[in-house]
Image (tube, rainbow, N blue to C red; front, top):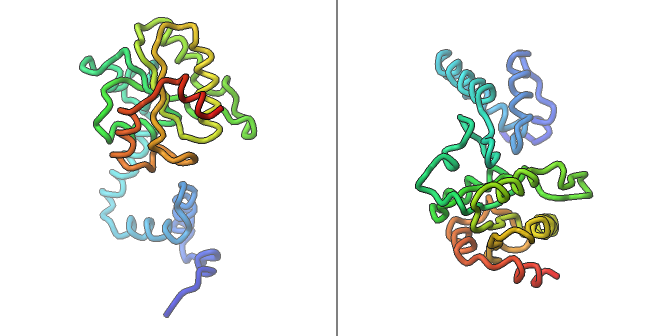
Length: 217
């Protein structure tokens, strides 16, 4: 017997505990009521100790997780594993929009520098200006560290291009090489959804920011 989608839009629960759990899971991005119900019913079938362990892990993550004081990546300590790794090129900074982009680039295993997470991109229509982003900490890093090169690895869209241009202007007086990833990523695409080979080539074939700005002007 087929069940229409309208069933899941107006679920009737025999337990308020079940209903509350489904509603909480449904708040997660990309999770609808149908998927939330499936996840909750899966947990109901598990041993109580396993579910308690699951909830303890989530609670500990939220309570104890930190952000790297240097690059703003997620970390267990004051400095993340990337910033504290002496085998990486500490004078090479890859500027990204979100932590998801760090994970995407790290998955390529082709980048051996450090990162700087902006926490977003300049988008006036969404009320996001430079002051809401981690731009000044980036400028301070370049000013106080022996940075040799900055690679912009922002999503190739209007907001990303605007952010590249703005930060590029802020860094124009610093003796640092500034590049951006090649257009292996289609305009309007997102780094986290690019395949690893394409992303790796975009980083290795990076171009000077002057060429990039000229190409979008």
